[in-house]
Amino acid sequence: MEGLNLATAATAPAVSLSEVKDHLRITGTSEDAVLLGMIDAAEQYAELVTRRAFIQRTYKQTLPAFPDGGRGLLYLPMPPLISVTAVKYWDTSDPSSQATLASEKYQVETSQEPGLVEPIVGESWPNTEAREAAVEVEFVAGYANQSDIPASIAIAIKMLAGAFYDAREAMTVVKMHDLPASLAVDRLLENERVQRFS
Image (tube, rainbow, N blue to C red):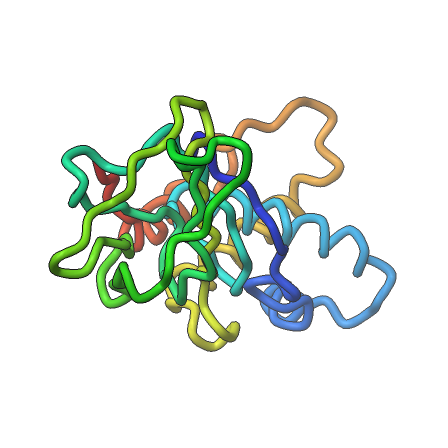
């Protein structure tokens, strides 16, 4: 998504190496480095399709302005949203430095997907300088543990990593839709796909 930057990466993959090795019935360790790369590629694809963050990480979302009308909902991508660390902006009254909006002036909704931020009753978003990144929201998103990730996502990642592994020595370029598991993977991931927001 435009303006979205990863500030702190996840500390673990969505699916462990041992789970993928069990799935593929691999007992040795000689292929571990290769498998880790395939797990990473499968996870990136799954996040792209589902529009979700899997294992917890921190993002920074920049916007040219707060939502229209001063009271608009500020949706945050890559659910599940865990918390908002800070809402910063370039204030029209002091364009020389970035201001931080007091946390008591807004509320965070984490129970829906995507999560959102909005001013509390009686407050409105401040006016900002006209610049590309006038607003910056730092937030934490993702599942706390591998066990919290929906089963359909975990299965899809294992299947896709396995398909990558099976095609590792292919002499020609392998396209996603040519992989035997691709249709099943996409159907599993579509069930967890987050709808876009405006």
